[in-house]
Image (tube, rainbow over all chains, first blue to last red; front, top):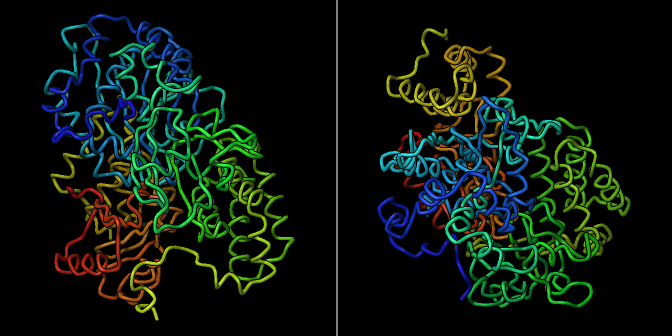
Length: 449
Length: 175
């Protein structure tokens, strides 16, 4: 059985309540940090742990924390990024809904380490009901003395608030999130200055993903070294994977980094194999932005090594033959899936979510959606496939924020690995009608006939 | 409609003031997004220009600062909607598991197209981007509630129940 750190008590009834969470040892990291450690010592443990940002970018958390500017007399902020919007990703929602106090505890311990006296959890608007769960947990934490003035009788004070967004993928980008938290449109800022120097209200700010902040709890409790012993190489610790698509057991799984991809897809401990006895066709391993890989390349690297669920192994081969761990949004597709149609849902998504600041992204995402629509409508030409390739290549690296890359990479990878499918649709438009575009729900044919 | 006719209920006003108190002095504009949610829930599910002007006056900011935000985020409605907005997720995982069937079924059942509202003002159908419920696909959101692992039968039951309850569903509802 794999070691669990974040979801170890997930099966315990009532773990969403303060009483049960506390009985299971909850808030121990706050006691340890505030009574036995200095803020710098907490940062040091996080550095030692090798923890990398769990939102998708994988940047070392301890290093991000150490960049935080500390000018005297200027407030610092910790902002939790709970804007989880990357298609295929639902782990943060699961964690916040089931074990809200783990995030609250992580926020307190992390805020102490960073010297923040006011912190915010920015949660996507669609998760409004989850924000209510968090607010209830925060009220309980205030009542029990874990938040507010002079926590545990120390001179450390912290106020923690939840802010809801209103529907915008771009607000998962940290500077867009800060704009939104300031009550503005979610337009990403030009960096530098980075939030660590000039963030919320122009004050030094750290923005961390929900899972990252939750992971600080076991790191402080057990020490950074113990955390670093879990996993493989620079992929330390555990990771929440959101598994969805054509699998028998979709859901959130906490894995020790290093599990072979094949085991993750086919073992009963995780996804339980492909549903309806179908064959595996392709996987998007780390949320919609990362390159899709066909069955042979997701199970094994180009060199024939087993592919592992680690940052390094998934990216082995670069984008030619590899992908990324990303947010851990693991979307599995069976043999009947139309890769072109799936890509269309991605491109439509990025077009919808582009903030519109940078022309290559604003215009390019729209073009890509339109061309894919044209191909799926049976009016595509071979030149359109080349045009798609050309457009995606002209977005990457030419925008303020990474939404440009996020929109370009899935298009590039789909053409790279499944060009034959695009060409088949173009040469033989009637084949599109025959393609089983998606899994059909029961009785549908008769109902829609 | 003039601004004087638009006023939060006492309960909403208390919530609005609580939200504003979360931000440092002078940074009350931060409260804009949450307050627009409160306004939308209270004023018939959408944000008219007078409602937005009212919110601007509460936060002591220019109306344009409210308009530019309200028009940016997809959860704010800038025109009237039905009492129940059925927001069906259409992105990858939900599509893979039949989201298009759900949309077509609702269209057929309600006699409207995606984006339209029924003549009785009860339902609006809106397909939306990923709602973070991929492991329980296909799904739709109505008000605060996620309806997951949908089948056509479940959709039928849901529509019946919503019609029977008959009240407006908002994001602020307790689930």
